[in-house]
Image 1 (cartoon, rainbow, N blue to C red):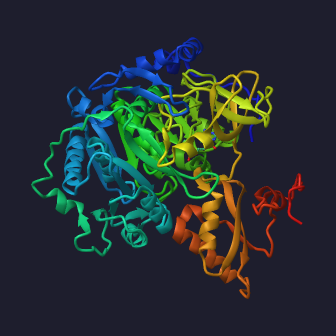
Image 2: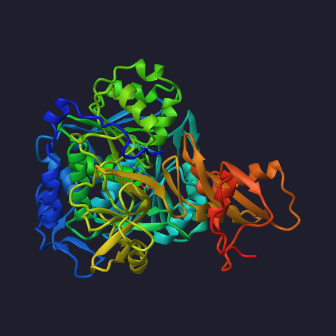
Image 3: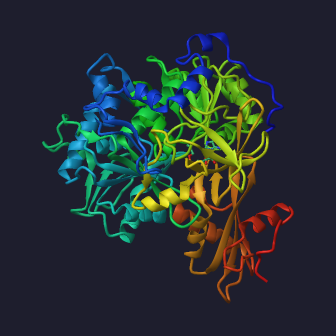
Length: 632
Ligand code: WT7
C-alpha cells in the first residue's frame, strides 16, 4: 500500500503554520532526545501537581521505568478541578448527540457535578482507592463520568468496549477480579436497541467476583434487576450520600489509573496498566502539539471511549487541555451517509480524528453526502488504527478537508498510551506515512539479527527509549511485560519492540506496514487470532480452529477461519452460519469471521503450533515459503 519515497509532499498552508502551537520541529526534536528528561519535565510543569516529583525518570529497575515518582497528582484534578477554578468553569466540556437526535451538553462545571455524584455513589458502594471497577457501557456521557469518577477517588477503571460480548466481558472481569460493574440497560445502533444488561447478566453468571452492578438507564429496554446486586444509577444518585461535592484523592504519579485489555500474540488479552502522572503528561502534550489544540476548539475523536483512542484522546488528553469534546453514539451512516458531516456542520467541529476504516466506509457513498454540508469549520484531520491507504488519504484531504486541512496520521498502541509517530500541523506530508517520531522518541528498524535495517527496507519497529505515557506493566504480570516488549541491545540499552513492521525512507519518513504477529487489525479493531479460535472451539461441534487475517477493501483485514469439526459432524452452510453467530455471541460483532472453511487437517509444526502463515499464503494463492518445520 505504501509507495515510500516516491510520493510528492503536501505542504501545509501558511495560516496553519502561522497559528501552530509548535512552529519548528527539527531543533525541538533534537533537544527533546538529547535532554529527554528536561523536555518532559517542562511539559509536566504545565500541569497541576499536589506535590512535585523527586525524579523525572527513574530507570533503576529498567525496563520497569517510573516517571515523576514521588510526585502527587490526580488526572481528574487536571481534567476538571483546575478548569472549574478558572475561566473554563462555564465552558462547554462535552456535547453529546444520541443516534435518535437527542442532545445533552455539559459545561466543565456540570461535568464536575456529575463526576462528583458518581464518585460519591461509588464510595457508598464500598469502592476504595486501588479497587478495580469494570465499566461496560454504550457511548453515552455516563461512560465518561464513570471513568472520571473512578480516577477521582483513586480507583482503577477497566473499560470493556460496549461492542464486546459475554465471554470477552466475563474474562476481563475475571482477570481484574472486579467487585463492581457499571453498565447500562442498553445502547442504540442503527435504530435498534442493543441489550447490554442481559449480556452483562450472562457475563456475571460466568464469573463470581461481581457483588454490585450499577446500571444506567439509557433506553426503554425491560431489564432484570437482581435484588441486592443490581442498582439503578438514578436511584443511587437521589440518595443524600450522592452529593455533588467530592474531594479529589491525592494519588501518586505512579499510582494506577486504569487497565485496558488488549489482544496479544497468545492466550487471553493482556491488561495494560497506565498511571496517573506520566499518562496525564503524555496525552495532554501529544494532543496539544500534534492537534494544535486552541481554547475555542471543538474536538471530535470519533472513536469509542472503550478503546485506548477514546481513553487518551476523547477523555483525558482533551479534557486536560480544556477542549470542548464531541461524543456521538451511533452509526456514521444512520439514518443517511451524511450523519457525520451533519454533525461537523451543526456543531462547528474544528478537528476530526478517526480511522481509515471509517474514512473508506464513508468514501464508498460518494462525494455528494459531504458536499451537502458546510465543512469549513474543519482545520485539522486525524487518522489512527491502521495504515491509511493513499486513496483514502486523498479523499479525506480533498473532499473532507477541502485541500486545506493537514492530515495527522498518528501511529501508536494501547501500550504506548499516546502518539509515538505523527506529523505536526507544520510537517510536509506524504499520504500513507505517519511521518516522524514525536518529541522524545527515537524510532528504529531492525532485522532478525537485531541489526539496523537499510533505508526503504522493511524491519521490526522499535522504540529506543522510555516515554512518560508508556504502559507500566501487564496487570499482575510484570515479568511477561518485560519479556514481551523489551529487549536489551548489545550497547546495554533497553529497546521496546512494537510488534509492527515498517520502512523508513530517505527523508526520514516512517511507513508502518502492519502487525508481524498474531494480532489482527479488523476495521482498526485489535483482535488476537487465538481469541477467535477459542471462541470457535468453545462450540460443541468444533474440534480445532485456526484464524488468519486476509486483506479486505473496507476493513483493512477480514478474519478467515479454518475449522475441523468433531467426529461424525457433517459440515454444511447452516453450521457455518451457526458458528459465525456463536463467535459473535462470545466475542462481539467485530470478531465474526468473514469466512468459515471446513477442513480435515491444519498445517502444524512438529511441536503442534498451527502455521497460520501457510494458511494465509494458501488462501492468497501465494508461495507457502519455508515448509521445513511442517509436520509430516
Ligand atoms: C496497532 C495498535 C493506538 C490507537 C488505536 C490502535 C496499528 C495504529 C496506526 C497508524 C499504521 C497503525 C499498529 C499498532 N496502528 N495506528 N497510524 N498507521 N498502523 O491501538 O488497538 O493497541 O493497536 O494498530 O499495527 O501496532 P491498538
